[in-house]
Length: 65
Image (cartoon, rainbow, N blue to C red; front, side, top):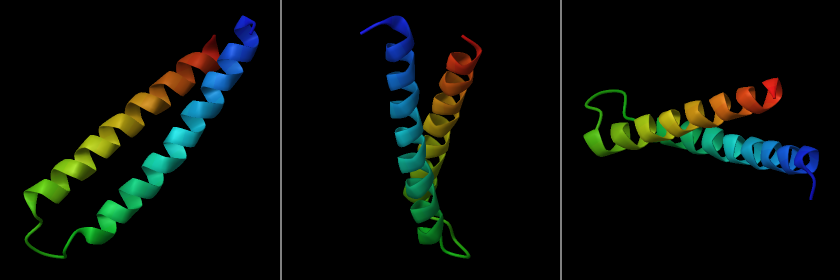
């Protein structure tokens, strides 16, 4: 596989992961109660958002390459 194809494949996988993360973030937000947010749920949400940010950064770097 040449470098262009490898980058295209990585971009595709990153977009798929980004979609999965967005769905998981939305589901986690639905689990948040209006009051008295539970720490484990909030930790899950923050971890998902952190990973989403990393995926977005990687996509941007590939776009610039």
